[in-house]
Length: 499
View 1: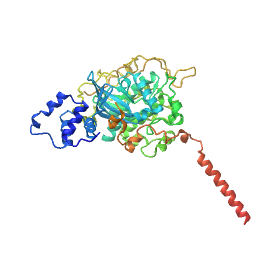
View 2: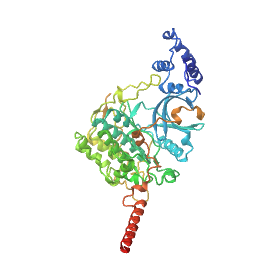
View 3: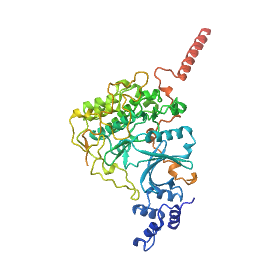
C-alpha cells in the first residue's frame, strides 16, 4: 500500500478499487475541461472529483492513504463516515444491488475479540430491530463480513442534538419541547415493548430536515423479556453504565435493575441541555458528576433561561427528580405533560444545522411537507381534552397491559391507567412545512475524540466503579488512613511519657 505520488497513480487506485464505474470515470476524464490535461497535483484532482460528484470525501481520504480495497462491506459500498461513538463508527452506504441508501454501524475487529463488546453490539441490533416506531431509528439486520460485524439501519439525513447545540447554542423553547416530546413518544413505545434504553442523551437523538427526532444506539439497552441476556451482570456488575452527564441516580447505584424511569431522568437531563446549552452539571470530573446526580440539584433552568415558563420548569424538575417515585412513571405521562408547551407550529432545522455531505453522497430531502406522526401531525389542533383519547401508535402491536414490568409483586409503575399510550397517533401539532489490512482507516482507527466527545460516550469501565458512589459507605483507603493516624498518635503519646 503506497501513497499516490501522481495523478496517474491515483487513477490506478481508483480503477482497481471499482468504486467508480469504468464508463463513468472515462466519460469524466473526457470532459472538455480536461482537454489540455489533468491537474498536476493529486490533492487538486481529488478536490475537483469531489466537487463534481465523482468521489465522496471519505473515498478521497482513503485514496490519499493509498488504499484500493476495503470500500465494500457485505453488499454495501461505503460512501461517507457520518458518525463515531464508543462502539464503532457509522457510514452512509449504498446497497450494490438495490441502490438504496442505508447507515451501517461497524464494530472494529479489535472490539469483536472482546466478548462484552460483541455481546453489546448484538444486543443493540436485537433491541432496535424489535422497535418499529417513527421516533426510533429503524434497524433492518445484523450481519458479518469476515471478521467485521455490522448493523444495517435506516439512514437519517440529519444531525444529532449534541452537534446542533454545540455548534449553534441553546435551542428555542418550542423546538426543545418538540424534540423532547418526540423522544418521549419513542421511549413510550420501547417502554411498552419492555425495552429500557439506559443511554438517552443528546448525542443519541437524530433530528432530520423535517424536524423529526429519532432515538438511536441501543448498545446499553436492557431487554426485559430476554432472560438469557446477562451481559450487565456478567461483565458490568461493578460498572456504571450510561453517560456521566445524563445518567439517572439509581443507574449509578445499580445499572442492571433500572426501569423506564431512568430513561425519563436522562430525557429530562437532555431537555435541560437543549434549553441551557450545557448539561445539568457542566463542570467537574466524571466521578463528581456521577455523585452529583445522586446528591446535588442542578442550577434551576429559569436561572439560566428566565423566559422558560414556570410550568415547563416544573415538568423538567419532575423528570429529573432524584427519587424515581417522584418522577413521571411512564414516558406517556411525559408526552402529555409536554403537550401544554408545544405550540401550533415549530420551526424546522436550518440548512446550516444539517449534515453537509459531499455532492456524490448527498440525498436531497424535501422539507415543504410535514409527516403525519406522533408529535408531527398535519391535522388541525383538537380540544385539549382529546389528548387522552386512546389510539395505537404506529409500529408493531404491543401488549396494552398496565405495565411491562408486571410481576407477582406490585408494580412500582402502577398509575391506575391501563391500555394504549394516551399520546395517540396525533395531537394536533404541526411543523412548518474485507481483509483487516484492507479496511478503511476509519473502521479500525477512529478519529481522535476530543475530551468533550469522550465524556459523551459510555463511561469508561476501567475508571469508574459503582462502589465509589455508594453514599454512606467508607472507602478502604480512608479507613486505613484513619487507623494509621490513631497508631501514630498512640506511638507519640508513648514517646512523650518515656521522656
